[in-house]
Amino acid sequence: MQIKQLASETGVGSYTIRYYEDIGLLPQARRSDIGYRRYNQYDVLSLKFIRRCKDLRMPLVAIKSLMAVQA
Image (cartoon, rainbow, N blue to C red; front, side):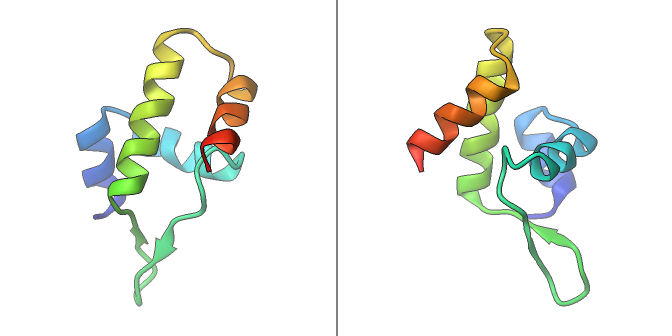
């Protein structure tokens, strides 16, 4: 799926998704032949987890630590 679909499915904006990739909270997206970001179901689950943590007002550093433990 592309970034718009991921944003729609998770309720997280595309700019935020790119930011999470830039800071290493999400892995860098795979790219299609023409350069579009491509996401899979794992990315959906990860982003939903991050969103739930943000809803609980967890700082990004703590979320990143939790993501590292899950991997």
